[in-house]
Image (cartoon, rainbow, N blue to C red; front, side, top):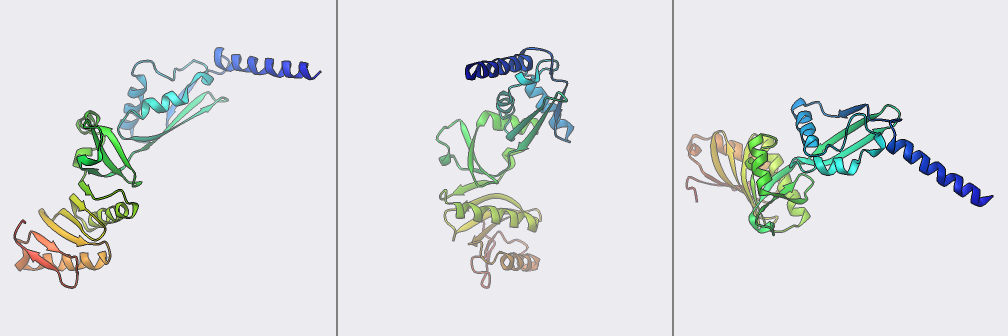
Length: 247
């Protein structure tokens, strides 16, 4: 009796697999890309259409290879994660894409492969992208990776990377554009920042007392005597140093 039950279960599994995967009983009726931006939707569809499309209307929904869909879309430089859901009742395949976000481009020492560029992600992980794909993305206007600030990072220490993220966010909140950052350690942060159409070389020291440092810098830039200032040392915000020399 037990053998018969096992045999029946096996037959049911095989039969269900055949019905789902090799018949038109549950076909793909609709493909939905969960994204409001039409340009992004178009790009994702075009990527899926390259070569053999892993999702075809009318084919059994069980044969949609979610891993293949994710791998195909993750070839796009800006894609971080892909979620593919199959609704066997409605026949709808729903694709959701999470974009990759980068804070800065690292100097070449971080990339073991000379054909790759390295980036610091917003999650503070360092990731690598083929240089050919970076250029392609910049040309297509997907994400302007080439405009990211360059980062000279002294180590892979999490606390140091968090300090860099904090500094970039604070500068942007202040209204500045970060050109590059040198972060050899947590006590010697320095950046080139574009503020009010001029580039400033700013030594921050650490990220301690950032609010005070920005307040001091704002007051310094308001002074007529500092209209040609090029360098500001805010390491000690109560005793700032300004200079009209570029170096």
